[in-house]
Length: 172
Image 1 (cartoon, rainbow, N blue to C red):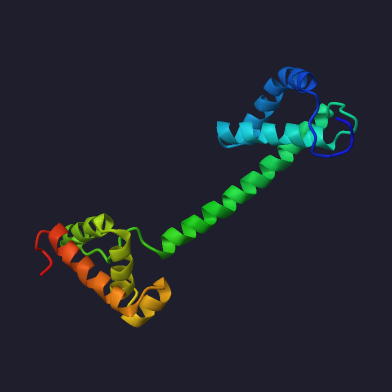
Image 2: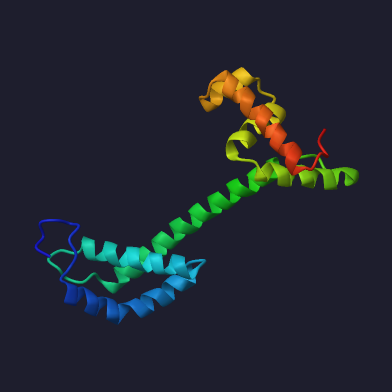
């Protein structure tokens, strides 16, 4: 490194030698900090790069600094994962997996409709969902999806026709 840029990496041989010497123990530590092998490998890579970039004049980073960076980044990753898990759990609790209220006698019918809806092209499924479950008017659907009003109505009509085919006439 010539010191002109904080984003330069050391000479290839210096870097390879340092990585070969220290990577196994860094990865072992990262595995203890991370939830997955892939996360552990990412933590090591990011910490080594950060350590080398912080050093002046091409000297290798202190090993303690790289370990500390792995620990700090693992904590950040865990916090991020925990926040995402909480958001996803809350979304599932607010929005049940089934699209319909399930009464025992309705389960088979509900499953038939759900499967048919999943098979519809996206453009039809979106309009049908907005119209039936979202209770939007065609004008509102057109505005929301940036399509003409007549296109929204046509997609709804064609989507219902497809649903009838997919449910083999169960929907009259």
